[in-house]
Amino acid sequence: MAAASRGRTRLIREIIADIKRTLPGFPVGAKFSFYSISNQEALALMQGRDEEKIPEIEFYAAEECAEICRLLQDSGLDFIEILGDHSSLERGAAASSCYLALAQAARRRCTLPIILTGGNSDPAEMNRILQNDGIEFFGLSRELIREPNLPSRWASGDLTRAACIHCDGCYETPGHVCRFA
Image (cartoon, rainbow, N blue to C red; front, side, top):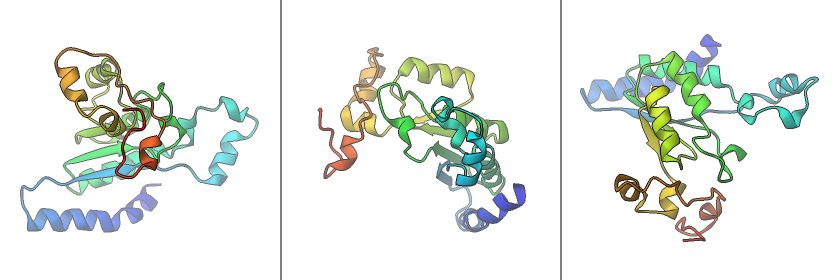
């Protein structure tokens, strides 16, 4: 796995090194979407198991992706934003911080600051993650499409969940506007 990951990241690592050489002290970050395991690996995972009962997160190549994060860190990356591949994990109101397991896998392999993106709608859950999982930052997208003033609302003490229901309707509209706002 390490050799394959090293090969897959060669160009990115070279770009990071060139940026660092050209702009010393300039922070370099990356947005990394963890990817699913191969069809062959998925079939092996499902062998003898009820497909409906396998958590979707198991279909991600979490350890390989975490190794890629480590390699990028070793190349001088300053921070990384982690998310999945816009799977069904993100849909529905129960999708709170749905890619946490992927960020945790990366945290086990690297020490650079991590931005967790995907379903960050519950400030209590985000605070728990901040305190317990070593994830320093959170990315918000659809939540801000639905509620542009969400950070101000949370900062003022109203810590109710974001109003976004994660239906993905905003991605189907010109200009990404919420159909329910």
